[in-house]
Length: 292
Image 1 (cartoon, rainbow, N blue to C red):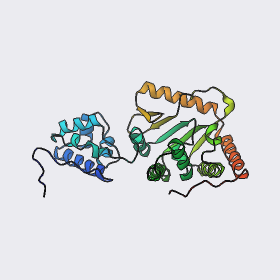
Image 2: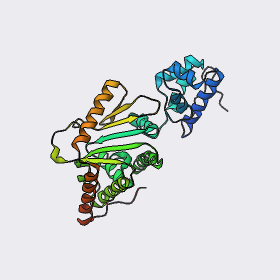
Image 3: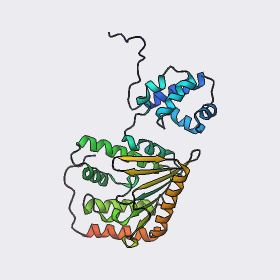
Image 4: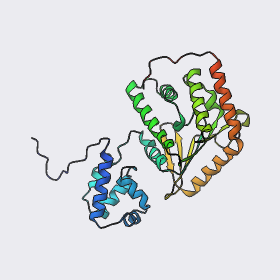
């Protein structure tokens, strides 16, 4: 049996439960140091709920915070050494923290200029988008990305939160991702979410012309015990911002888009009308077997 060399502590395995194990160790070390959630949060300059979410594995720990924890708790580099385990996630790195924050948000407001927002996508639509974006990716990767995206939509199982309000460009419902069969299903799903009073959705029509959201997609999130945040997304990149001035400007952008968009009632009428166009046009089943 191979003996572990002294001076090289064993690292936690990166598994589906590694973050929970990492968080449990944080709670143990915090209690061992005689610190409450509030006291540790104050030293880290975060709310006690942030520390609590770290301890149960709901939030990923940031690298600079791992350094602080080792210093505050005297843990001989444990949290830095096992940072990979503490940040394990099924999501792409640039989006992982956003996916976690969605589960904690009281309200999510989203502007999407090209696609149906990820939280509202059907499996078939998601597969079509993934394939359009990366046609050479393996079926296994497609399945993993699809599973991660569908897992995000579980936030809608909570009847109380988040308040979800989206503004989408008309291009999002007119571009036939996957073909008319898939788009009809996708738009009917949106209509159902609207009619069951689970989301608010507005469509920004082509006739508006130039508008405030032409620089790209935007997501705004507010929380019970944390500062509001904005997420700005680009090609394989994303920026999660909590700077008050930037978030304020992003909020203004969203408000301008909402003011220019169709009303929720008129948007629903348009969505259902376009769904009918897809349903009554040439109905071609999508190629290939279901990957789910």
